[in-house]
Every structure is written in C-alpha cells, then in structure tokens.
Length: 141
Image 1: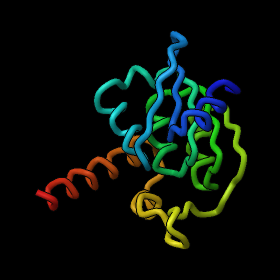
Image 2: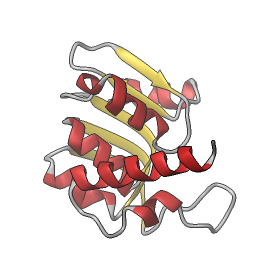
Image 3: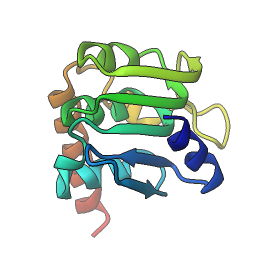
C-alpha cells in the first residue's frame, strides 16, 4: 500500500489500483469517473485489488465494495463511506476522516454524496449513480 500511496502523490493521480496479479493502474479523472469506467469496462480489475485514492466518499465506497476490492487507502474519507467498506470487509486506512465531502472550490457539498444519501447497499449506490449519469448524458445531448 505504501507504494500505491507514493504513486498517488508522485504521479498526481486521482486513483491508483493494484490488481490481483500485481499490475499497477494509474487513473486521473475527478470524482468517481474512473471507478465507473472500471465497473463498466473491466470489473475484474476490482476483484481483490488494493486502491489508493485521494477522496473516498459513499459513492466511491459503493463501487469499491461492489467490485470486491480488498483494501483501500484514502487521503480523505467520509464517515458515510466507512460502513459501506466495513460491511464488505475491506481493509481501510486513511489520512483524514470528514463528516462531509466538499468540492475543492469551497464549501459546497459533493453532489454525488447527496445523490446516494438515501441508499445503503453497494448495488443500490451503483444503480443510483448509473441512473444519474445516464440522465445527465441524455440532458447534455
């Protein structure tokens, strides 16, 4: 995990994943976009993977738990993410725990945290997010 944490900061990634074969994958998109992409295109990467992430909120935790990740590190983790990860028996380490994920621009709550606030299982979290992203895609056409 120390290597993943080092890469997260040295390469200025948003997410670093070590798959079960030991291959390292670097990701750079904000929010849960990379987690969504992995879920949609390479879900087997999650199985028994280790992840270092800059921010893990409830939305990110849903993807990780559903995918079968074995351990995570977060620079910042939300209190609402913890039960999702713990119920999936994911080993958790972090630098800072916060009540609410806020956007880098200031005091604005993360929209995805609000979207998943009423659901509690990893599958429900991912389903709600998929519906949200599909709706946004349709609106932007």
